[in-house]
Image (cartoon, rainbow over all chains, first blue to last red):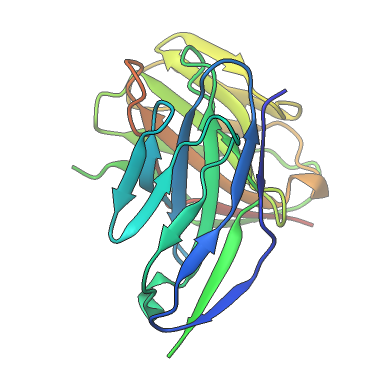
Length: 113
Length: 113
């Protein structure tokens, strides 16, 4: 079946540091890939997405590139802020009929001033 | 627009009790779904619906019922609560066409004693 693997957290960084959160996937066909963010006490918000190979999703300074050859969708940001502290989920949708999202286990990011 | 709303925010149940978690959306989305979030496991799909009168099972449907009598509402029923159902429950909605974004509600935290 479909699966998403994310790096274990928590990831602790100082403000203005470079961020990478690794995400790899297993799926049949050509899934769409997503990064969701969950701020403390809130629901999930879509951060960015990519629907085909080599697409780059970007939002709020975050970027991720759909790499079909390595089945990866790593999240990056050049300079993190304290306000980026949250849990980040990588997800895929391999079945457009069901629209079901398969999530990774989440990576908690803590940014210290 | 209110987006996706969920009630209650928090609930404590005793084993064997039943309850209904409410979910409503005002975006006229065809697709609605329920996920549960457990520590270290990401989100897992419980049930989903692609339109009024149409529901189907997700990854972890046992112990839960759903119905979709209107486009706006998608309640989740726990028939006889068990401690294993202690979790945070999220409702999501989205359009069926293409790879449109799914929007998540703020969640319901359920504790079963």
